[in-house]
Image (cartoon, rainbow, N blue to C red; front, side, top):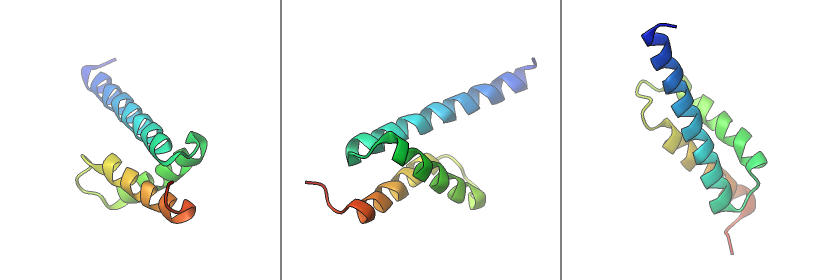
Length: 78
């Protein structure tokens, strides 16, 4: 396996870990099961990836959108 392929795979692995951590963080803070958060996060991330030219902060933007969506769905936390 070439160096470029190893770097690509490492980057993908890092992104996967970052996204999993974001999903866990949202689930904990919003008190919603991870199983409900994950598809929402993946959908929002995919949507914003389509038009993004700079991809550095997409996980942050996706997390914010999911939190806003969950707040609208569940109402304020008590």
